[in-house]
Length: 286
Image (tube, one colour):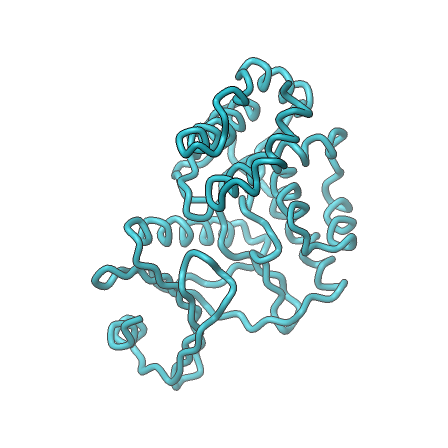
């Protein structure tokens, strides 16, 4: 991290900088200036890091524009030499209590229930982790989910010899099953990668979302991701469903939507994710 460059960008000397741990893609710091403005700074030096940070910033700004949930303010996206920088507001956090989880559930439901786009997808592609995520717009949710979410991840896994070609389900079978289970779906603005590390509760109890992979899709996608690795309490789900009722086929949809995230993890982290992927494929598409 180049402190001289950052001081010029921030227009202020830097009083202190300390590492912030938790991510596996970027290196992060808390930066404090003499005026007591605190910044969260992410840095990365791989080839498409700037594009990834630009997409993250655009996603944060889209979520903020909904005015339904809090997002850290975006200050700068920049590159110096080979290092990309994303500079955000630093949010002081606390361990969530049950009241905080209720607030988060209500806020997420309001986001999903707010006025949204007419199509599934988004005007810009972005990233899920380090992987490219296609957001080509579709008028039909089944088409979007199969064509822009499942098949690209399967193809990537096949190309990397992580997924046997013989296990690739027929598109016609996927379309039939998904159409029957999904029913009529209206687009909601999604966080897109809502695991337990991608929300914060500020010290005054305000929920924030971070590290989005936004697009317009089925609200149950975000809920499915919250259930994959835990970190969300029963109070969170109860609060959410006070505003948006659970889908009639929620259990099956949780499986089908977790398939996307498991494929992503298969492509990012390897064969330990093959068995849960295989279980879902066998349950629904064989």
